[in-house]
Image (cartoon, rainbow, N blue to C red):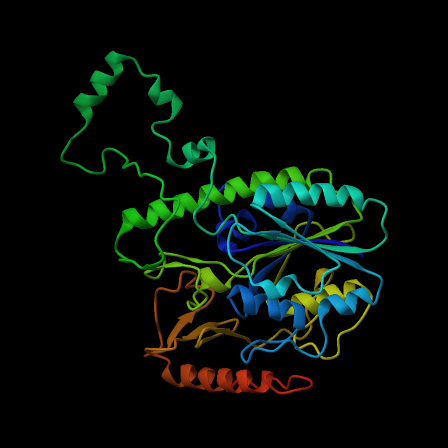
Length: 402
């Protein structure tokens, strides 16, 4: 196994092309998805960096934090796989994740991390088996974006309009009604370091500034990834995912504190690209971040009996015969459940909220009052699942109440 895993912290799935976005430029990620398999409904079961990493390494849910009896790194090392971690330290990251690797290198930022990865992959050329894990933090504010990319999202008039003659400009002024705000597109200034916390959900200008700044940051990272992935050998499996997305004002909050469990936080990308996959395939089954460890273990040629997640190796080539009825999620003291038809969010304080899926992608229409019995049943199952995941041994998944 030669596996390059790229964790882009704070990357929302629906902000990139492989998940349907059409206005954020992600040429590299689009090409990666076209070469491999995209898991369309992949969820971070614990969208906090520390708990997300613990779930990956332990193969277990972290409703009650635990490391589990077996660690992913020890498991693959038993199969002769050398393990390497390259960390972008420009944002805080849990120190415990850096323990247990054969080699750890801390880098100042994302560009340095990707340069170090290029050097490492060159040295590993010809080695039979390895796992290289990249932790990138460039999508967590403050965002560092080149002026050219900022101009692409915040630039003034298009070039053909900027080249208008003075005579044309005078004619244009005569046609503009100064009392009509829709006559001229409003320009926004970048906001590369938005303050975390509650915001006015009706402040459209703030929302657009944050969204466009985030889009520029994604395009910046996409270009940097292109330099790394260009010419990647066919025998290297590339996996791209995120520990969590982040709130950008969609529900009146900005930040990545792991307590909001809306789609912009828990719906994250998972893309596998490499030889042997049917190019451009999309998997619609519900999958979870806790599945990543068991998947890597099987790719390394071993099994993981104590893991609570499922290996996704079979799904890389065929449809799932027994799809999950739901995915349970925990962040802070809040809980959430995704089923193919509904999403339930049970916040630490306040009333539960229920959304129809996949129709209500943005989770704006709460139907909890209309489907109170369904919401209560889902909440009971969710709490039972959290309790069951804390027990030793194999996970006994509670049935979803009818």
